[in-house]
Image 1 (cartoon, rainbow, N blue to C red):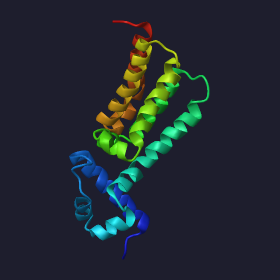
Image 2: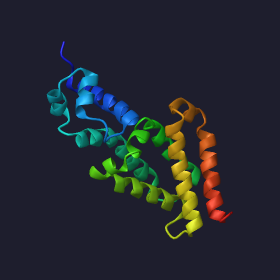
Image 3: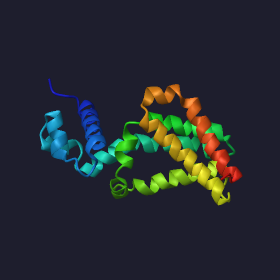
Image 4: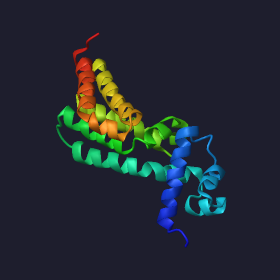
Length: 183
């Protein structure tokens, strides 16, 4: 029985993500992905004409989730706990993807996502401390956001979800330390 096209695309994305996470984007070839799946390179090219197209498909759900986060929380005053929690949830949902793609910012640059990632960080910092915050406060915001992303990606989804409140509290502490300019 032939595979459904949507199943094949999902299988390709899954295999690619696994290989990208283990070997890196640059060191993974479309041939390796096709061999992992037992399909021809031509079949793979039918679904994703290039490795960059495949990477774009992998990161599209993350982009959609970040757009939704900013649509929900980006329009007005928010409590830092809310935005940090919402961001952590996005990072947990994409915990398998984050280490694979953030390890190769050059690849993200080629598909136009590196700038978006930096923009997300900056927009989150503005939501957390304001546009004109002093440098220590902005540093605290960057530490809070980066720390949450790393925690969500480093410990697995189940552990991350179990310890969500702790992760948010630690991020809030980084935010507070930056805000107070503590040494």
